[in-house]
Length: 313
Image 1 (cartoon, rainbow, N blue to C red):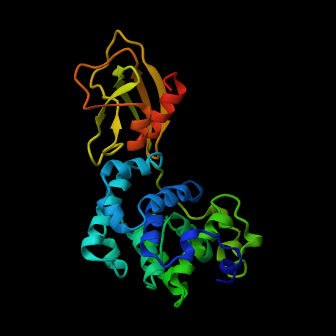
Image 2: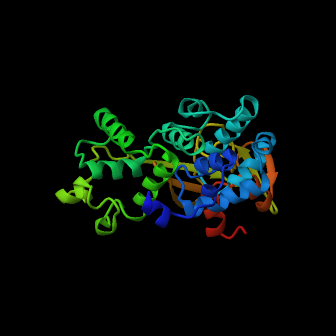
Image 3: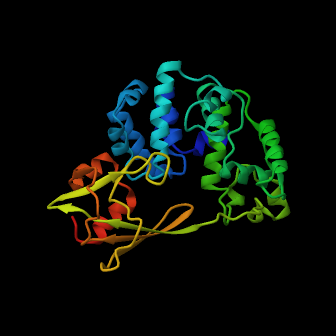
């Protein structure tokens, strides 16, 4: 904790006791780097300063504020969570936080420890890396045995009076020192107590037995145009680009047209996007928007790349 007090990251939500600001930061930072998520957190607080404002905001406004963060289902769940909190009040403790839409075990533990002071370890990939190295735990980290051991080990080390700060200290340690490759063991405040450092195995841990399977996917889009207006459809909720407006996706490829091709990588998908700039499709789009209007409603990053790679804006 001394290291955290002196060297921890200075993040604005850490100076607040506002549960809305803290909850918002945790949701935004799911699968998002801190330097990227910070500006979105500031934007949400500026535009929607309370959970009541968020709950009552139009879906299009929330998607516009979220635009560019990716994983758009998180925006849907954030909205649902705000509505639930306004109705039921702020959760108290780990089990209650788990009942909020969009909150999984790690985020529930982080919020329970930070907001409610509950002594519960927040375990994500970063925390598993730190704890597996301190304990020199060499079993596959995905196994139920490993998860049970790490949970027990972490619980035994949590600061009883500052569990939230301790969980955040572990995150900062993982980010600054206990990195996946070339950990800076000589600079680590746990240098003397880290079993993997003594054994020389730190860079080998945690042991992972499964690799993320990346799926290759081709997608084809018509490009309806009326001057500066694009003809768009709204994506179904829950799928890729949930609830956002995109160009109409084509079930069959128009053989007489040559597409513009863009490759776009998501965490578990490698997309090859085909845009038929001279083909308007066979059905009327749901809505016609300018680039600026489309962007304000929440434009998927793949379409931002397409619009800037080809001469549309």
